[in-house]
Image (cartoon, rainbow, N blue to C red; front, side, top):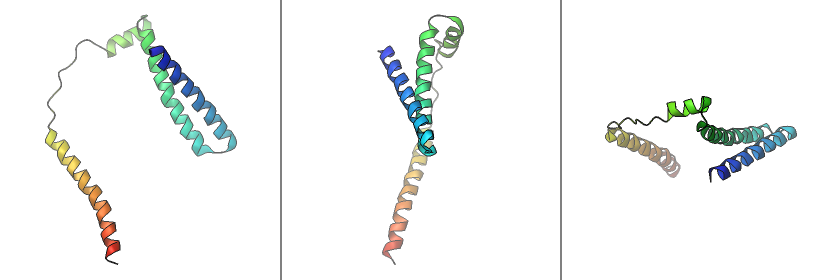
Length: 109
């Protein structure tokens, strides 16, 4: 399954790179950069998958894998949820105000 996903991501990377080259060739730099960024996203997934495969074979990737994926996991700390809820309420109030104020100002004209 992992090989199939890696192949699919590699194909998406190649398609995005080809589309970016075509866009830059036609003079559309906005579309070219759009496909360059998607190509970089899919390329990063391909590199991560290949690095994960090579981790089992030792060498640099094996050391990196052992350093990043240690067996000891720290216990999660307590997160005060009231701060998150307060910020969500402030964001919701700001969104409502941003919608209601222009509508009310147009109704009163």
